[in-house]
Amino acid sequence: MVEMSNSQSKTDVILIGAGIMSATLGALLKELVPEWSIKVFEKLESAGEESSNEWNNAGTGHAALCELNYTTENADGSIDITKAVNTNEQFHVSRQFWSYLVKRNLIRNPHDFIMPLPHISLVHGEKNVNFLKKRFQALSELPLFEGMEFSDDPEKLKEWIPLIMEGRTVKEPIAATRINTGTDVNFGALTRMLFVHLEKRGVEVYYKHHVDDLKRTDDGDWELRVEDLDTGEVQYHTAKFVFIGGGGGSLHLLQKTGIPESKHIGGFPVSGLFMVCNNEEVIERHHAKVYGKAAVGAPPMSVPHLDTRYINNRKTLLFGPFAGFSPKFLKTGSNLDLIRSVKPDNVITMLAAGVKNVPLTKYLIQQVMLSKEERMEELREFIPTAKSEDWDLIVAGQRVQVIKDTEKGRGTLQFGTEVISAADGSVAALLGASPGASTAVHVMLKVIEKCFPQHLPEWEAKIKKMIPSYGQSLRNNPELLREIEYSTAEILGLEVARSLELAGVGI
Image (cartoon, helix red, strand yellow):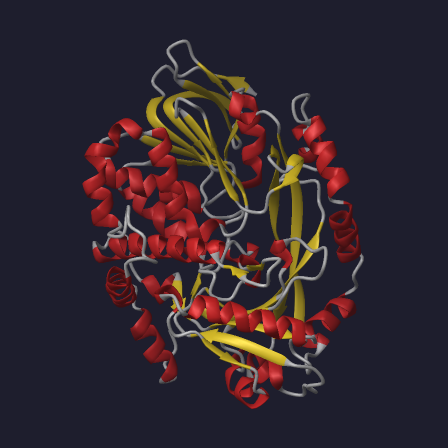
């Protein structure tokens, strides 16, 4: 390994990791301050290969239209829709920014990354049907969820989800909600498009370069130690601002910053498996994202769903996820990742989380031990006629759930997306999982607000050009919502794509 110091390597912004979050932040900053220099370091050979990859289930259009775990039932029986509303609004922010980029030909062929697709929630049993009915009543009153339908009629469900209803003996109440304005988003394809755009705008992207350390310099900048994985050469790069967007690998680098905000934070890795259909006839008989309810003790990321997906412009069908455990923080990580993340300041936090989450640990062990046929039995809860030979098992990506001390106590396991930033805004790190990629633009705008407050007065007008709803609530402004929904659908080709599909024209 050859150590080299490069005094010419100073830059304004460094992004660590070539995933959807770095791509989004880079694209935003290049619109706001095109003169700023930006470098990206990615240890793999290309962009979007870890959590953002389409085969790693990195968000597929989470707008809270069908994800039942985004709405919870209160003790008095009412439904808390706060997370669903917030997530839906945040997804609209993403759609506005993508539309801005497409309209200006900064990225092209939107149907390569976004397609229209119905979103459906499906439940069984009287208790769950009552919950779904109350959820429907609470959401369908809002313009954000306009067009949502509810049915507990098996004959109607045969029209909505024929593959799921075929061969099903209905012995208990069954119900579903459907909304046709949902989408499927290929975040791997979108990430790659954004990096092509960034490189055209002068962003320097270094693949097969691993950032293994960073520290503050005397003048307040950050110095990164970067290894070129092809040559073994070690380089040093400095920047005024660093964003750590390396998926599960972000935690290690955040800890190395030494900032106070990095203390008492740990990570719990959860891996995933999916069943993917290899029978074209079966794939063509299903056209929706269908979400059920998670098993008792299962993490929210394990909510079972049968998803139509568009990958490489081909319709595919996936079922899962089946949770698993690996000590790796990245799919391409090390088996020592978990152990290395335990530090003197977070060991109590980690131990407390272990004590609190014994049921989760048992659940993960049970999931790991499942045979293919046992997984097929779970699939048959969705598709009664499913045949083992029509389905293959694939390994999805790694997720690292954040563990931190909160008002609920020490070692609380978090299931959302978290941004940790220094008080002076010089460094920020992204941790966590779902809804993740779907809300990337909202999350990166929060990074900009936190880390560049001095620039916001001059940037606000430009941000509003890119995201017309910026600073406003779509929930409380139905006229603006409808205007945005119509314009983004038109620009992203969602209405055209849908009409072509119904006409039998392949896309």
